[in-house]
Amino acid sequence: MVQRLPYHRYMPVMHQFSASRVVIYAGDHLLAHVHVLLRDGRECTVELDTLNIVGRVAPREIRAVLSWIVSNRAWLNEEWRRLNP
Image (cartoon, rainbow, N blue to C red; front, top):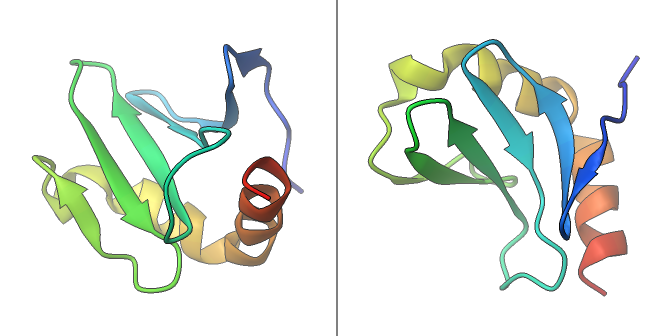
């Protein structure tokens, strides 16, 4: 079950991890993706269709996040379409 966390200024938090959080910006650019914000201030995007990571974050650093994205991909795509009509 997915728990919706609070919204933060046009970027709803989809999931909170101990060292990161997954957000979707409203009115964002195309290809459906999520932003992964790390506690140390780094950020990357993960494309929902390909899981391509764009940014200065290694896949091993967000392994749990990638697994969660795969498990919740359909819901994340729905949220992407809702926030980015």
